[in-house]
Length: 112
Image (cartoon, rainbow, N blue to C red; front, side, top):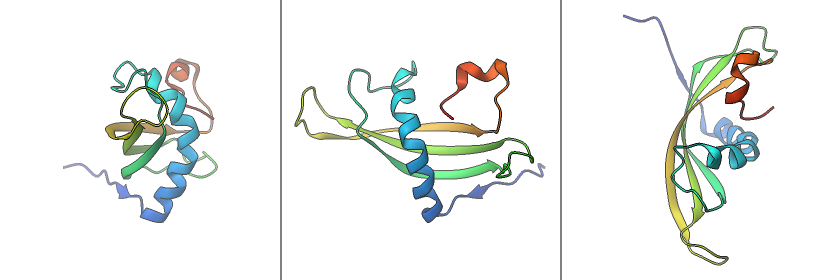
């Protein structure tokens, strides 16, 4: 049996988390090969679930943190302005949070 534990991120904290990740995910997510909405801009995100798998200290001295997120990306349903909004696709993301990034992880950087 594992000694690992996880913490569900409470809703008020989830809003702040999404607000801080939104400007980082908007350009990053569409560049991923597995992104389903190619060719359509991301207009927003909805946080479906957030779980802290590995708590990281605020100063980064306690090591890196790890979040498991389910994020729904909203996009226009069709091409052109004024198109109806698609309910969105949901993506499962494992987001590492660390003070400094080792060079070997540079290709995985989402933002600073």
